[in-house]
Image 1 (cartoon, rainbow, N blue to C red):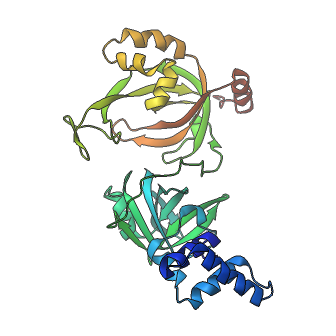
Image 2 (image 1 turned 180 degrees about the vertical axis):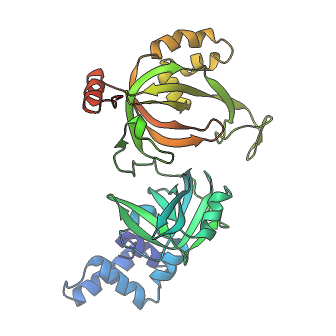
Image 3 (image 1 turned 45 degrees about the vertical axis):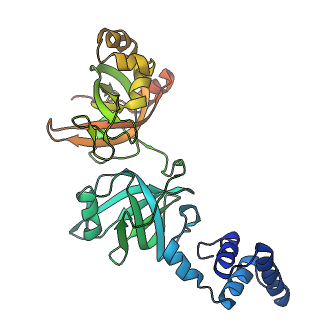
Length: 338
């Protein structure tokens, strides 16, 4: 009810009225008996809170609702969360009018949810890259929608968005549960810039030498000239980036793997991959084992403006069953040239 559990209401009463848990429970039990069981425990707790002059709605507006307690169709919600991932802004055309929509993931200690922004003023925070990983967000007057079975929090023009609100810290963040629907399987020939949560099935046909960039050991952000923008002069670690061409019989695409995905593809351990930075012969050995391997890749399609091509950024991968590859390619044969 209103995003508060029975335990939440008891804690509110205890805190604001300096009562023990047993004293609060006794008042609720008394109310239940008086109403002859015609009301739930939560309902009785709400009545007790109101009679004691506690405004639970005001408490929710001030302290927010935990992500795990958000319910479909809930409106005017206040939520605090730490940004976990930011997605590209998309444009759309509705009734001949062009608009934009942006989204990102936030998390708290109870869960993770996708935030969707529609208002041009809110979208400016995304366009200016002010909304980025680890920034704490406060959303007010947001509303919850269901999208393919998953909850999303939408913020319209009447809602409010605040970055890094004073006095708010979020340390522990729940491990992201897969909050997205099953990945959409596509042929490489059908991929378009902006495609997200997309699965392609194919074969590695060409591999390029891994590149490396130095990242902060504290926050994993890129180090520039020996300095992290957030932590100053720090000891960094070298992060591998592996580029390769991936072919599914309909076309091919340049795929990009970072960090653990690059290590997995190279089929070795992190230390060996790190050593490839100085000894490229180590890569030559592993390259031969990777060529011709078949994978299922899940990720998003981006546009590389410099080379005027689309690329596939890998978010998940697993080695594929060759029989499954053959079945997929038989059921989706490449177009015949007349």
